[in-house]
Image (tube, rainbow, N blue to C red; front, side, top):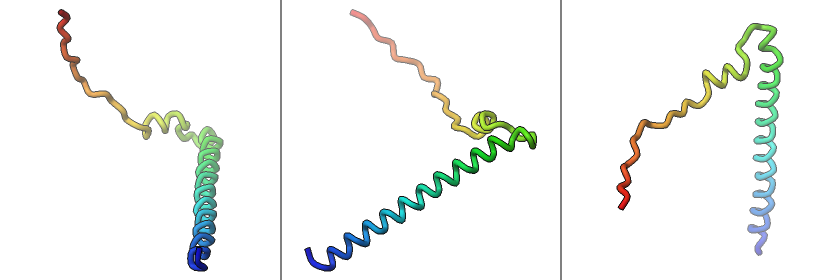
Length: 73
């Protein structure tokens, strides 16, 4: 391996640690915001997390489809 390959490997490892740090900070920040909302919502009269998820959550509906008829011999 040449010196350029060695430098690229070291740079890749360093960038991987930086990306992992940013991702972990984002996860912790989101968890702190959710916990603060969960704690403060009753005091301010805001909707609970369950109500928010119900209103803003995924709206999944199965389409109305009829099953094909299977003719038995």
